Amino acid sequence: MKIFLCNPPWWTDHCRGVRAGSRWPHYQPMDSPYMPFPFFLAYATAVLEQAGIDVFLYDAIAERASNEDFMVIVKQHEPDVIVIETSTPSIDVDLEWARKLREQHPYSKIVFCGTHAEMFSKSWLNLNPSIDHVIRGEYEVALYEMVCLMETSQEVPAIYDGKLVDIDMLPWPARHFLPMKNYGGDSVGNWMPLPFATMWASRGCPYSCSFCVWPQLMYGGTTYRTRNPIDVVDEVEHLVKEQGFKSIFFDDDTFNVRKGYVLCICQELKRRNLNIPFAIMARADCMDREMLIALKGAGLRALKYGVESGSQEILDRCGKQLNLEKVKKIVPLTMNMGIKVHLTFMFGLPGETQETVQQTIDLMLELKPDTLQIGVACPWPGTIFYNELIARGHLLPCKYEDYAHVGGAVIKTDALSKQEIEQAANKARLIWDGRKR
Image (cartoon, rainbow, N blue to C red; front, side, top):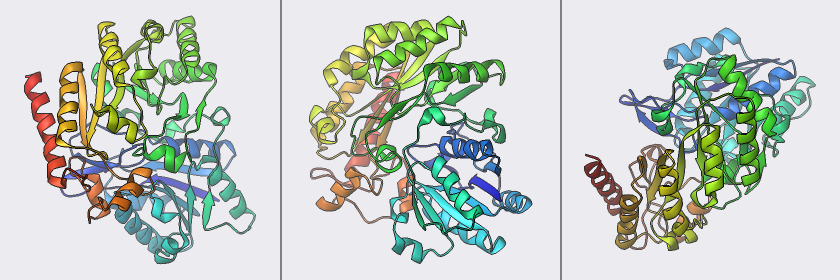
């Protein structure tokens, strides 16, 4: 049985989408260097390959393949099963791909995975007969189980529930199928020797941000799992010495949740004298001086802290519960140690007012990070944030494609209209850009 896993093309006349590997699938300018690594696809491929199954992985977006090129590649492999990682903003395009693939491969099974919550219902499947199965949640092991059932002609449920994966049991991602030098362009990459490779040391997050899609739709809640530090550093060493990468970006949901774990990884990196620069995704109020010293000594060059709002009330209300007083101490401490800092902010969370908008702008200017990201809160279907908006009548009529426009709002708050939320984000960008000049 031949299995074909893919991240199909997603284009418009003026921009391209990024889907697999992104926590926020969206459109990018055609010339943008940003390209996320498709972790779930690469891990799922590795699991099948390890089991001796005939498998091929193709990232059409990273390959910058045309629609025609993609169809030719699929045809060359004549797969029995075609697996597509989908998303809410790309769902209409993904369904069109399923219809085209069904025409070209009428006997192939088509499987959707990913975070579009609507597809986890029988009524949705009935409306979309090109899709044979969907897998809900983490799909690496679930896909393998599904393939085993197919190979033995057993019945496969139309909606297959994924399982929380023991990430220590997973093989390393199947990077050999992918154009590895095409991934990158992340904000932390500005301070990293190129090329850099992206990897995970952990999976999940113990916090409950109402807007965050992966914990709610991929992980099934606030589970947090870490890999064996030895295996993590083994993978780092392999990427550096065998694959030729010059730096590493740990794109974990929250790298620094467990201090002891972080210190173990730092100790192992130093013990092996790898001297490899790396960057992490972190939570500011989980960080402390001891961790920063250890991380810096092990090679940390840059990190991202998600702040989102300058209003403690908004942060508490959305479940993030980030301690802003700690943020105000940790960000300058991090920068004073020579570690580059990228902060993320968003406008439009429940409770947003003109006053809280100004609080966020004031915090941006007070913290003075090296770089920052300013966005508009996006309500992914199936999240607590989405359901709250529906209940309050704050989700505006729109197409799912509208979710792909990072600067555009599809929401309102009690105090702010869609236009005022967009204006708040634009105002913040203009103020920040003016300060940087």
